[in-house]
Length: 243
Image 1 (cartoon, one colour):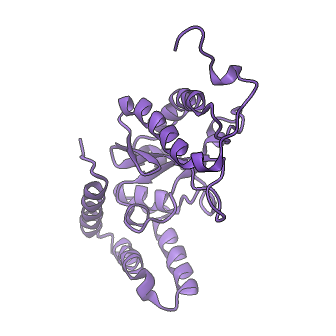
Image 2 (cartoon, rainbow, N blue to C red):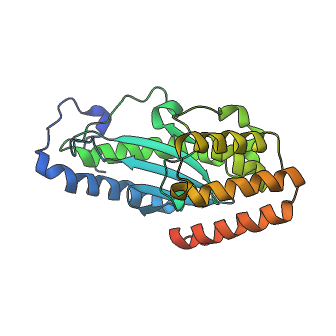
């Protein structure tokens, strides 16, 4: 950036975009951030930047979907930490687990959520904030073991953060059962309440039922095999290779 170019923080006037330009601008905005973070090992898949970190996958979700009424001029950034064997997220396309809004991690960051004609400068600003704050956050939680050592930072029952699977798989991968059996029981009971027809969630229901049995008998061999199979399927789908 040359000396006569402004940075986002120095702008005082913002030019709105016509609605028909929002979709291509969002695509370019996401691409710029993805290129900037590719040096740190992140790869772009749809609206998500993903990176394998041991037995976790770090995700930066640039959510430009807008509302049910159609695309609008605002976006949100979601930060997530997901166990590599979480089929609900990576195969069933459920909501991300271990999720936080970027402003939870960078509390002084103003809510720059509007896309304007100055989006290139905004992409540069967001990139700098991600490198300064979010990458160290990911470094702090680079394994499921690190998650368990700081489990108080991942509150169970938080419907926004959705930490149940994060703690469940973290415990299973580390042969722990401090909360895993309770989580499995809770989720199975919830599925029983919601779904009379279990065929809609058959794979997940069966998987959790197996975990319930294996945890009771402490059959870590079967648990390990199941987790490894899920890991292989997910890494293949995401085109990620384990180091």
